Image 1 (cartoon, helix red, strand yellow):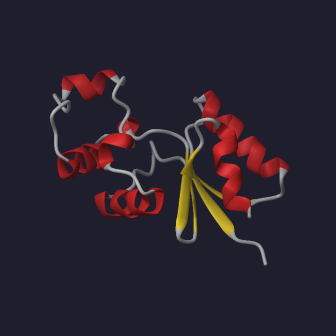
Image 2 (cartoon, rainbow, N blue to C red):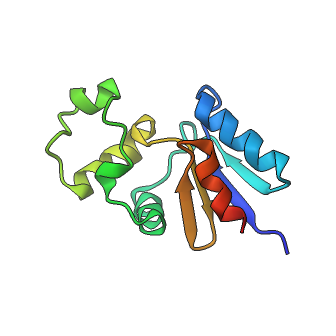
Length: 116
């Protein structure tokens, strides 16, 4: 049985493109979600954080200029989740989700464990 994976994808990001290509090469069934155009809700971000086993601060792009502009350095998890939902460019990419698991494609090979 083939499990469909969802990738939060930014086609302008080389790591996102590499991760998508890697999964396609291995025959994965992939639902591509251009998360910058179809932003995940705060609830979806919380769900993915649970699957990743991470805190919000580990999913947010701290080097993104918007992170500094919004003064998020000392923000708690809920504030970071709300900021990522409102400004999806703050979300680390790519995120690949399948069933009860998820992985960040940095490096792209990190998502291969989801194929097992």
